[in-house]
Image (cartoon, rainbow, N blue to C red; front, side, top):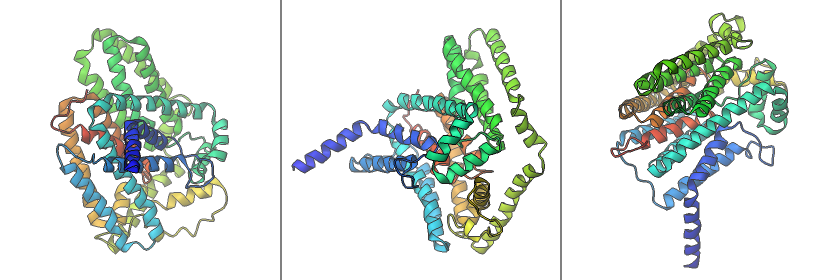
Length: 437
């Protein structure tokens, strides 16, 4: 009896602080992976994050806090997606490759459900809103320091970051590219939303901070020289301005003066866009050289190779993570330097969620994924009509992450985890009686 009371007391204490633990897990998942005490892939902050996520879900299970409310189709679609990924093991030639990628699937869906359980408690919503906003401020600041102090970051990357991604960071820095793969563009909807609120309330300092964050995010996207980030920037900025600015223009007071301010901000943005290295991204996008064209052609090559693998196993695919098992990389001489490691990793992935899905999970996986995304879109349409700004910002952010997957890998929880976090928050707000403000 004493042991039971002690266990219950511990569980209640953990549950009392579950939101803080949840925020810690999300934050650790968003920052670049570095080692914890031991230089091993099993001792990184991302591993710590995953442990916390699983631990919190277990606490929810013990407390029997697993109820779902509102429309069930989202959960059915997510479950069908999980099944489609799981059964691909039937044809997997390399179980290690399968398991490594399957961990990401399990982690993603666990995070989705945990986010839903957290967000359905409406008393948590303001705290979740604040967390996302301040996480955005921090991540944009970190990437800005990467641009300003690349030498210092190279030192950190060499000695503290996880080897598998450190090589990629070093390769990019040596090429004059500044990218931590944190997708800071996802925070643009939240900065835009806060900017409009500040305009409405005439909070000049808050408006200055948020406009600075928007400008800084745009600048960092351009100096990164990554076209995938430009794609994310265009989507996030366009949808944010469309909804939060033009959709609410009638709420703004003194519209003439405010429009003038916004025009000046846009002018400053364009100056930043085309300044120095920002011009290189424009050239890479619209006037690509031979190397830039090769990266585009590789996507089509990956699609063709994926189609061949699809024909080999059309129903369930060749197995999660097994695309690279069938791709011959023996023509690359692997040496201990970032460039060859980068080349090897690049050729092991078709660089596209469509190519990857049809090859590794077949027709079943492709239909299940398409159905899940379709239900997400229907769910988003319903919620947009409710005009809940924070939820709409989460919707924009989630699709900003996913659009990256059309042309680049998003096969780790580091890259895709926050997509599932946002989808969990969105699904929680889709209750019939949801009142999220």
